[in-house]
Length: 349
Image (cartoon, rainbow, N blue to C red; front, side):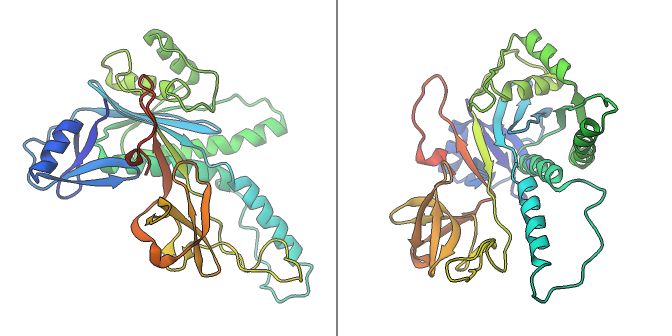
């Protein structure tokens, strides 16, 4: 069963409640509903009867393509999140470097070269991956009274080979940076990969070999076992429903496109604003319903689907779009595996 996050009038998180109780609160005007990152929440309009909270842990299972976060207490499993990892930064940095080098050979005005600022520190692709997980953890801290984090630690022994050691060191630097930043939110514990497998075997849980499948047994089973190692409780998940999260990708503004159009002209490309709308804004269109704003073309907006991000149209008029909220990622609440019913409109936000 799904639970509804609850916050007080100062937006401080309280213990989640059942959907039936949340509906009863809204009918009696004791609470007001709102959406936060694709999750339905309620805000109390009066002082809560109690503020005691139970220990709630978040298990985090990192991955190269998919990552999982499970919010669990000893009594219930509140949220299962399977997030798509940020994988496009490395190629974007390589393209940027290539275009900068190409501009140096043109007979065009340019600024003087600066010193190499890319040496040392955290690589852009590794930083983007860690920041994405950190954003999700901060979002969970705003709607749920989380007390602990437990992360599956990535580790490998150095082999003395330059190629192996150099490729793996950014992950080592990135994970320690992530642990430091995550420790500012709540206490952090780590588990090795073999410890996670022992937990699964102890609980009698099986993991799917299809790493890209949108099921609980793909990645969330490991995150659930990690959270169980801290808070305990029943040995079988009481909630297997999945919330799939995909980060929205925005291209930085370019003075011109990478390749010229016929005739040698280069049109502007990229940015974060489209005809007065922030890109990623959830709007309601008379024809396409709920969609989010992408780019712009010929004084019109480009609208994209919430389910898979595909472009619905390129000719939406800004006056026909009603603003709802600004999105930072796409969230899809999958149907219950046992029932297999289709997605409702309220399940996609």
